[in-house]
Image 1 (tube, rainbow, N blue to C red):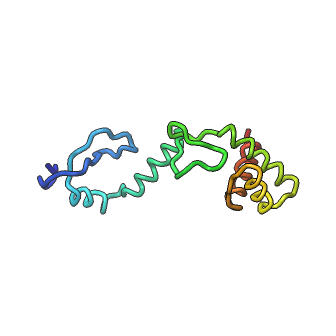
Image 2: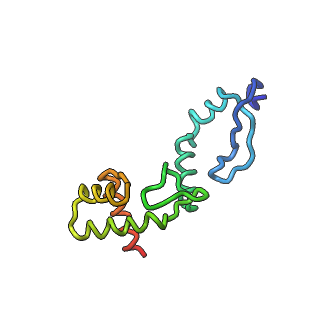
Image 3: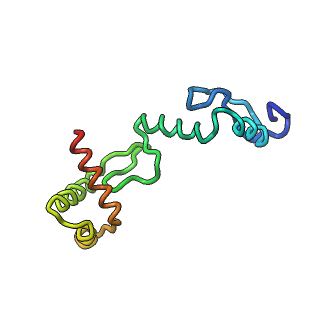
Length: 134
């Protein structure tokens, strides 16, 4: 039963937002729950962004599938040993002046991997950034 209007409740609303440490909920119907988040200072999108930042800061991967060279294990992004060898090869080819297009062709032929040129570019940039910060 909705805490506010006594209609059938189908939402659990955190009195203190979960991302801010709240653990207790009250039962609300969809209409009353929408009233809270519609005009409230803490909008659902803001709470979602804060929750995603908190998860990311804790080391969890929160944005889709893992980039090439990584895998998601227990929600956390970890290097894939088998793919890291290919990433190093990609960085070496680019450092030798080989174009992204040729790197893409090499990956298709040698490793049976199809990556877009933008994925190859991002992978190489990420790998170079990791080398710099390590």
